Length: 267
Image (cartoon, rainbow, N blue to C red; front, side, top):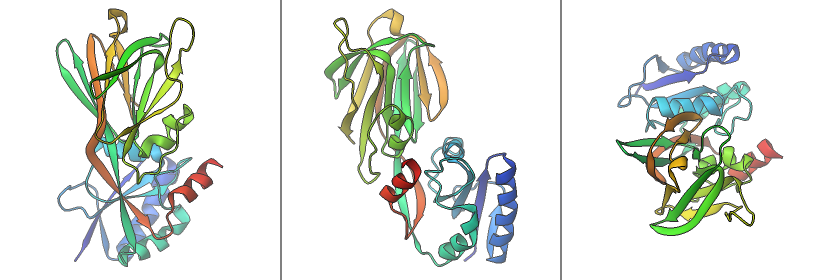
């Protein structure tokens, strides 16, 4: 049966050159490339670029269920499985079905304001911040149980997939993606005689819900950043964040090991 492939790429010269080479090699292997994504009939999405390109793909196509494999032409390439020099090996392994599927859940935030409730889903993380350089004061609860009054620049709520992204830069923990949990990491928390905030990450089971309520009217204007995309809200009453049911499916080959990848990318 004919396999249908959709290729998604960024606009760099390297990615465009790789796409041309890839298309020729796929056609020689009887794999047909389509220029439009059909969620019902596409067998594979090939993402050419870096991690940012894959995040844009996920957002643009609303967490596609179709398996995704990445060819890294970016910098870190943590999600991307293939280096350009190994395209022939990838095509051979794919045709032989010598791969597995790694499913990664995202993070969902519901933002309740005076006039509406909006929803954002991110693969890596959802960040809640004040405006510009202004600190925020937020009452944080877990499963409706009050935990702390946070004061600082904001909080980052990351999925296991996002533990190696902004969360890691903030000093959060790297989490094996086989663990289904949320990680809440403070951003520049205040810890002094006036304000008391957690200064380390909090790990939550997959079914827990995090509630964030502005402490005063001055804190009700907030910036929500989801996988690098930003929306500003006014008159925020509450933000609820939880692990999303939405997920993506990444193709991994037999030699993939998460901790080996961590070592090669960060050490």
